[in-house]
Length: 321
Image (cartoon, rainbow, N blue to C red; front, side, top):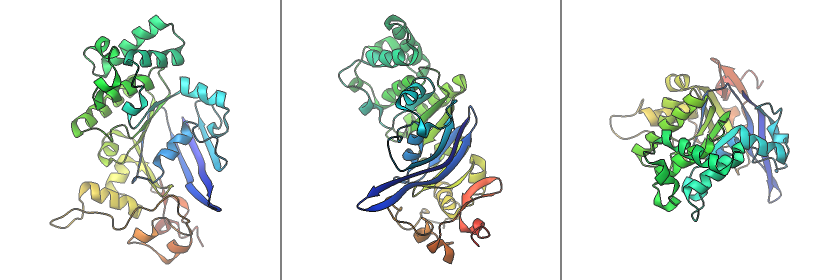
């Protein structure tokens, strides 16, 4: 189980303090899939980096991330973080081609990862590497192991990254926009590969994406992030059928076309707010068509409504009195 409570990240810049991530709370059971969605620059990746222990060196980090027997990953030592990444957490990067070493063959790189995660001999790692690639759509895994990254397509590099992530049968895998640089057909092939591996190994999947189609089709839960704040979280069906936060409603309308005129596409007016912005009220105030007076001067609390979390004064007015 993964349990995140009160996750906050503040940084000092030009004698000012900026809250990049604010009051993030969520929990996941083993085998569940969470999609963290939102516009570019909303803080989605920062939230997942906390789970990976990649923010532990920052002074403005607060909250708790309990997972894999670790009471608080945010307070874990470098040795403990290495152990978690080796045995418990897999990571699929956004651009695997840039993550792979261009001068080394795929076999050498994959075997190195397998050796680090399993402690097996070099010969065993070679066999494990081939066995990892075969169910991921490679008809000739031995041939792929002999190739260099530049000889593979983007989709093939992503499959290699998936193999590296699941080499130790982790308890959780974090996929940071794994389909953003792929064409439409390859995108669905890769997400099916990841979900197939999840079904086999029963790991928890945290998927960072701006693609609502993937979120609604392949995820149990969805967390909607804006300006570093978790605005709404619930099941995929809840957010699709009855979104509560005005921002979530806008995203769903953009995706489904619900309520749009006879011609044209629906869009959310205005520009996404930068996380490097000083806030006194709701971060969505300038773009929201349902805003109240209190929205401009006071940040809304995160409350439960219809069994889900929503950070909006439309539902939290009693708490603000």
